Figure 1 (cartoon, rainbow, N blue to C red):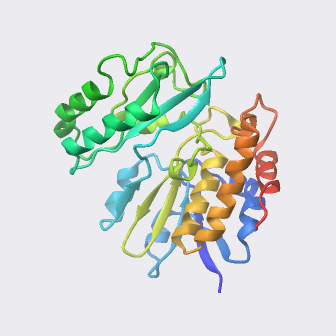
Figure 2: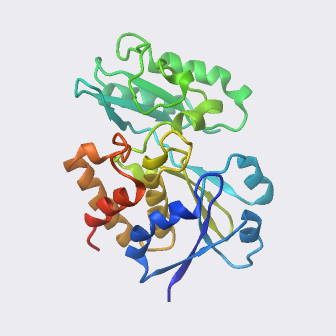
Amino acid sequence: MKQHILLYKGQGIGPELFESLRAFFNLFEDIVEYSYIESFEGAILIQQPFYMLCGPLEKEQFIETIMQDSELVYTLTCIPLLAAKKRTNRLARILTIPLTNNSSTSDRAYLSGVLHQVFSTEEKIVLVQQYKEHEEKWALRMKIWTKLAFSGTVLQLEDRNLYSFIKHGEYERLTQIVTSAEIEKVLSGIYASANRSQNRSHKLIKTAKSTIALPIHGHAPDIAGMGIANPYAIIMALLRLLREMGYLERSQKAENQIERMFQSFPEKSTPDQGGILNTEKYIAMIVECINL
């Protein structure tokens, strides 16, 4: 029996973009049916468990207000994210650090080990602090993490833009520590990496009965800079939903094949190639590499 995925446009995915993704959706038509819904409230009224692929929402508090039993799962981890190639063909990296109420001295020690292990002295990074509940409570802890992460000569920061795809003007010539209040704005300008990207291109909202995947706000290839959810993030969000629905092997196989394609052809890791590709052509390129 097929399972059901609801499609809701949110603030950034219109029917046209969903239609452009149809070729990818159809790869799983033997196990999944898709239905459009007109409003988020309509899904909340459904009495049975549901899975939803939802466009970016500008007011996340709106969700939290409606879904009091929700658990917001941020899929950022303390693992270096392969971000982009500089013109010198050297890799730049972004490190995301999760901060929770349980963060401790041992966490900071672990981070120190990670930094020394995965970063060379020549590499420049942006340290992105994960979302936190009460910003004022984390001010001192952020200073501690900052001092630890950037002490000595292990890591150095440059006042230059290492990531050409950070579109927001306020970050164009800035490489810095980004606080939680700004994290969504920054991530929206970062195109999802092919390196374990399923864990970085979306967020999950899990309730007692349902799961909602929200692609990170980004840009689609044919509407670059318009703040529309990028198709790659939508693809990875769908694969994550399939995992949640129990189709782990199917989802992982598709992700592995996409990742291998990007490793073999890194120039294809973004569809925004001087306007050469549009969404449908980009999706067709990805679908062609998948054999389930």
